[in-house]
Structures are given as C-alpha cells and as structure tokens.
Length: 176
Image (cartoon, rainbow, N blue to C red; front, side, top):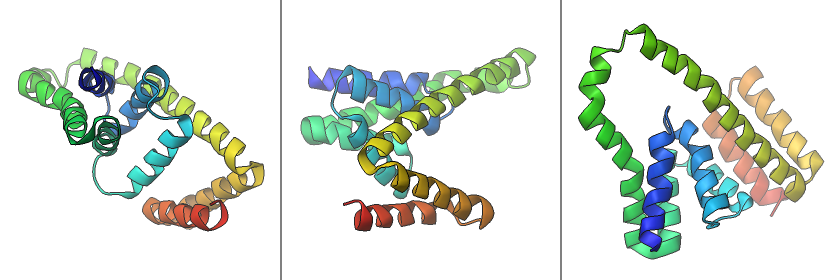
C-alpha cells in the first residue's frame, strides 16, 4: 500500500504542478505533510533547504529522499518514477499539440491565468516556512536571516547558492 501512496502523492503533485519544481513544491508539501503525514512542516522545510543546495531538480531529490525514508530503495524508485512520469507522458503525447498551438491566444490566456495561482501557492508555502522559522529560531534570528539574504542577493548581487550555503553554515553554528 505504501508504494501506491508514494506513487499517487508524487504523481498527482507533479501532474498538477504546471510550471516545474517551484509550482509542484507546495503540492508535494500538501501531500507529504498534511495528507500522508510522512514529514512535519519543519522536516519538510529543512529537506527543501538542503535539497536546494544540491544540483538537479528539487522535486526528484525530494521524491527520492521521501520514498527511501518511507519504503527503502524500491520506495525511492517508485516516488522518482511518479515524479518524472507526468513529464514523460506530456512530452510523448502532447508535445506536437502544444507546439502546433503555442501561438494561440487561448493558450497564452491559460498561461496568464495559471501564473497568479502559482504565485499564491508559493506565497502560502513561504508564509508557513516563515512561521515555522519564527517559532523554532525566534524573531531576531529569522529577521536577521531575511535581512542578510535580501542585502546579499539584491544589493550586493551575491549568487543565491552562496547565500544558501551561508545560511546553512549560520544555522549549523548558531542554531544547532
């Protein structure tokens, strides 16, 4: 039964996650944290933070980790397959149709309507992460990391990868 649950959790999340990893992350969170309760919000946010420091698509890293944690190597394989299956299906079946109608006004309207939904999903997830950080680390630590990240990325143009590594180091030193 766990293999079917893993498949459904990641297949549904990734088939509905129009726009790639950032769009599917809130859907994955809904499945693994709220529906199946495999992880807490804190564990999910930590996994997401660590996963973002590694190269490659975030959804596949999350699927592999959660699948392995819940059902071993076969569970990781099932979750990984479920994560890439929607893309494979869409590429094989719909590529010609999408290419044929890519300049259609209706397709452009559909894309314009989907973008705000993705933004709201990401905003809700960011709020949940902020609330969890505020509870676990305190207001001052959270505000410091937000301000430092903003200054480093927006004002000093430091690459986000270095900001993430710095935040991980800060957490390991001051928040462990």
